[in-house]
Image (cartoon, rainbow, N blue to C red; front, side, top):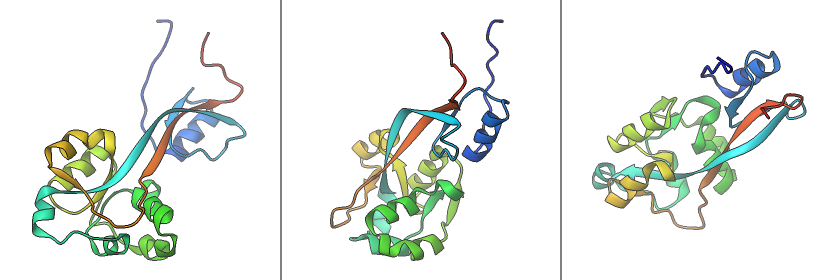
Amino acid sequence: PLVKFEIQTAVDHELEAMLIENKIDLSHQIFVDNSKLLFQANTFTCEFIPVVSKGYATLSKLPTDIVETLEMPLIDIYGDYSVYRVWIKKNARHLLSVAEKKMAVVCVTSHQALKNLVLEGLGFGLLPRNMIQAELSAGDLILLPLSGDIESVRVDMDIVYKRNNSLGH
């Protein structure tokens, strides 16, 4: 064949190392450390919003402000990909040190797993709006009714490759 195509999964810093070592030609990443050597082009942006399931909302008092989310069971993405910490930093920077100590009841590595656990009523999570639009419309997921000017988190996904490489003709 003219093109060999293989998909590998790894976290951003591992993908970056593979790019630099010429083990892969391109990657999809959120974080890029070596922007001098690597070129990044945005491929899409996700808006993450804080939600709970209808069942959770029926059984538990929902928060009215961002401080109260610190007492809620959190379902989050593992490690450096925590959207909750970014959301707190963006909306209530003074709570960041407390939020960084908050333990999630469950940490997962995929948004689909996070969505499933939130739908099961295990707690709240920040999920991509485009991924949960049907559940929001059906009332199965509920946006947290927080007071104040709370902003969602936008995460860019970039295609990344070495600056001195060409991606095609």
